[in-house]
Length: 352
Image (cartoon, rainbow, N blue to C red; front, side):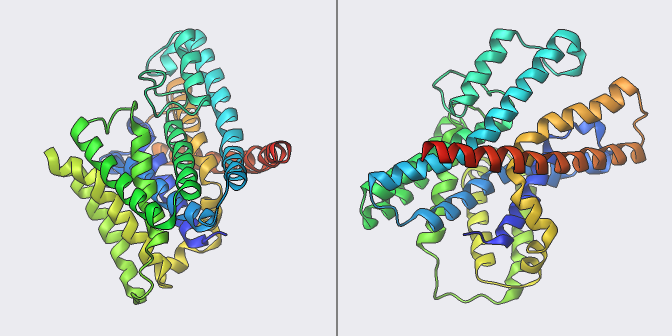
């Protein structure tokens, strides 16, 4: 079951992640210097929190190994077709660029390094230290690794532990993950990023398990969502030291926790806005947008400004930005239907 306004919010935040990864040299300074854009990487945490809630919402009743196996297969077939397709496509792009247009990419790599990163990604290991310190191929894919690991952890807890112990385990995972990330200063690396996913995903599970049904919220409380989010981005951008680390590891997740709670209990202006057809569509294709975006926003802006030689004026940069986003959305609609859905359904039929 889908809660469409949460899909809409995921679509908005996914575009913010795209803007964060967009080449800042190809953006007008008024946009690139914004603290909102510069800190939009944090919305990946929101994806984990929302995923934890949605997965628990749909699979909390699992009770045996057969259901666990079916659940893992469904999660695998949901993620893997697009992960495989986008990884191989990105590998092909990197090989061609390294051989013929090395100036087109930031850091040229050897074929062995590229194949190593591809293996890391396709085995869902590029958020773990299993293969060492690798970003994987198509670097946003680290979060898909973390997502799959979180799925498995969730399924094992739900099937093999009773309800009372389940709640305790998810609370413990949240706190232990937070302490680990703070004490080991590994938050900005890739070796242990799966723990980021487990922390945020577990908080999402707790939204479902502790929905605070007796609390009633008026629709105007939705205004706290953009206020809290913008304040959080401001804190991330201008704070330093332990407070900044604690915020980006823990309190930002609480902000997302509160935001989802508010949306689940209100039907105000933001709910209606996020529930319109465009934002629902954006949320529906957001997985494709997320895995496709680095390739698209690398090829189009650099091709136009570096190869064609278009002057980087304010107007030209805006036009290229909207051209890139438009093509990304159209291309992602294609991969959503033909890779995510069609190949996913085929795999599910074969495996189930």
